[in-house]
Image 1 (cartoon, rainbow, N blue to C red):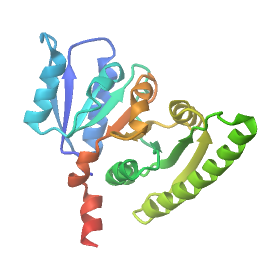
Image 2: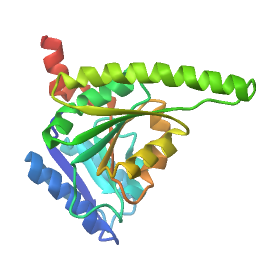
Image 3: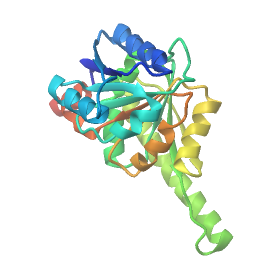
Image 4: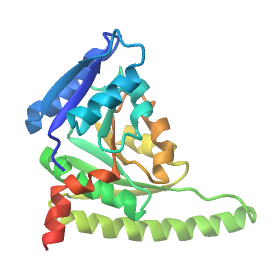
Length: 237
């Protein structure tokens, strides 16, 4: 994936400076054009932003984390939510890629592989396994161990796949609520960016992860598969 246009809505609210800082860091590092959109006087800024994204052909919306969840279903653009307490200056040296191991989720992460590779980051592939307590504690323990083993196998296979494209990732599979696992690993590993997919079961927790004020979250739409250099190379092969 190669982002061509970043759009940054501006309403002169508190905390907007760090959003601009992240947009400028991405623009500088990957030579991406930035468009600033003044929505300060709009009566319906959400609709104005959605229309601008569509008309301008922007493929990355950079916005405060408090508003990001309003746009995580934008079909054609990725959304980067940045909180007021995000690291300054921005750092993309440690990146967490979260997956629910569905094909849709993994395809979204494949699409962003080119961007991740360009950062030369330490990458952590993370999967959360949620096990209910139906059948009692003994059954829960058995199911948990079985599902953790299956998830480790699948995640290792995906790690090996993206390794062939120059990404060396560490896999992390833990039992627990997806949002708790993702944020917990992100904090312990001091990552500077969380990458997640839209339109998957994991996408249901994207809103919750967006709300953390310290670690920016990049939500990738599956529809960007058509724009992925990774996908084009795979099809040629």
